[in-house]
Length: 203
Ligand SMILES: Nc1ncnc2c1ncn2[C@@H]1O[C@H](COP(=O)(O)OP(=O)(O)OP(=O)(O)O)[C@@H](O)[C@H]1O
Ligand SMILES: Nc1nc2c(c(=O)[nH]1)N=C(CO)CN2
Image 1 (cartoon, rainbow, N blue to C red):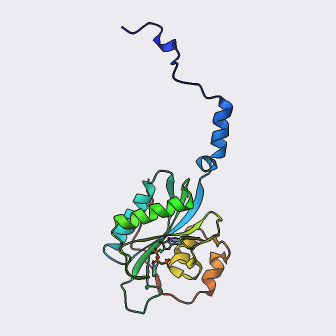
Image 2: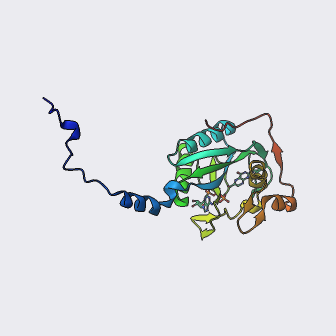
Image 3: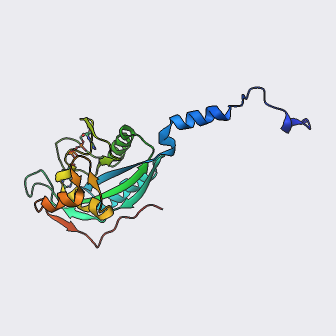
């Protein structure tokens, strides 16, 4: 039988944590209250390109500590960095996310999503079902080859800058200047808006 005073009996194994300690711990974990803004580039030139881009966006949205805030229009783009005609065209898009994940964890998540879509890495700039690159993470600058921020080639890629400008016309590439200025000096790179296609911003 349950004692009548059960609700008011304190559990001797539970030590109350003073409010001042809770406050200190929360304040130390700045990421908990302070999501960062990151820009990701998505590209696909193998398989069902649109479906794969949408799948990657949905998988990112399903990541704890990450919310997709904006999704760019879709562009069909000539493969950059490889001989003309050697690969199929890409579908590219850029998304803006807010996340409490630090940059290294965000990259890990990006790689896990690439693996889930069976991306093969056997040649540099080879064809791929999906590529998820971190273009920029807040204002962070990093020269670590495992995670260079901003992405070391973002400023010269129309397939990144054009959709990025669509979702954020005032965007800047840290260390390189406004996206709008970079775009005005880039040579033509074979970027075609596919207004007939649309990627959904997850609910
Ligand atoms: N900002 C970044 N975003 C994604 N990967 C990065 C970044 N900076 C460095 N890397 C590293 O680059 C390595 C190669 O990445 P990946 O295979 O996606 O290159 P790629 O897409 O073929 O070419 P590129 O790097 O020119 O876009 C990754 O293992 C990763 O550690
Ligand atoms: N058009 C286009 N070209 C590329 C792309 C891409 O996403 N789109 N990604 C590359 C490696 O990240 C190399 N070349």
